[in-house]
Image (cartoon, rainbow, N blue to C red; front, side):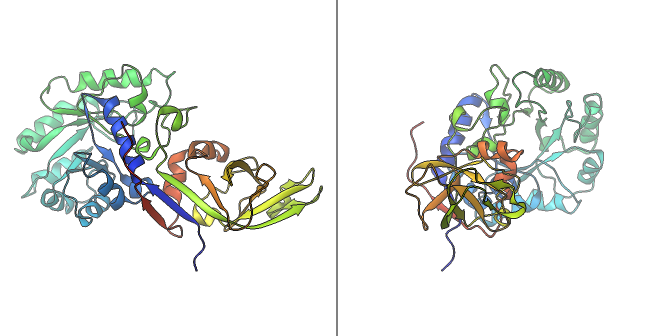
Length: 365
């Protein structure tokens, strides 16, 4: 019998979070970003859960877009990283993918293509990773006209660098640069807002927003958790309590003896570790939940196990289910204790952890 270390996915939470994104983005429409295997939730299952809600999906690369097609879903899919080979042009045209182009060499691929997919142009407004500089946008548009593919151009995208920080003015700066850069083409669509931008008061949403991490119930904002923003966690990471023992004062637990009991402590061992994607750097004090009570980790996380202090859960016993993150413990809290972000935790849950999908019914709103 397999161990009961699982990730339970609530698809109604996905729909709740997507609907919240739509309300915050309105009158813009929202394309659901389901890259990185649906942020660790399973790209096919996430796409199916949102198939009746989202008019368009967005992914990073063509492999992810093809996985959506293999799931039987024919929605438009935006490839945010564009095409990596000239051979991808025909595939994207055939499959109805919309590609984001960010470099001259990608424009050249269109010139030689017999079939041209729908595409967007990326504008670099300050993130400085990918995109055409605003001063070069007119040249790119002239080339597209020369190649006679302007009819396939959907619009323009950019990406915000600091939208998670309400104290930063950089998002306003980027918004201004983007607005000015695309002003000569008012009839083309525009997309700029990531998850964080949905929570910035007064932020222009243009035509399409791109909610990602918020769909999964984690916070895109600094110093906030998902529940504090009205989001519902879509993943509950659970593992069984497999042993309970009493530690005497002065006894340690785990590698390196990094935690030592100062008093008599009821300790539990949980069957999950960094081999499952639980963060190794989640130190003593990181919260978990069992038997109706919040508890805390003690000692180092090992590959297959971790230790918890059961002082505040006196009824907990072997066989009980421990929630590592989910409805009782926010993944954002765990990420802070581990010195990382929820994105990394959710996408890092390994294939050793089976995903189970449950939809107890759509929530109002």
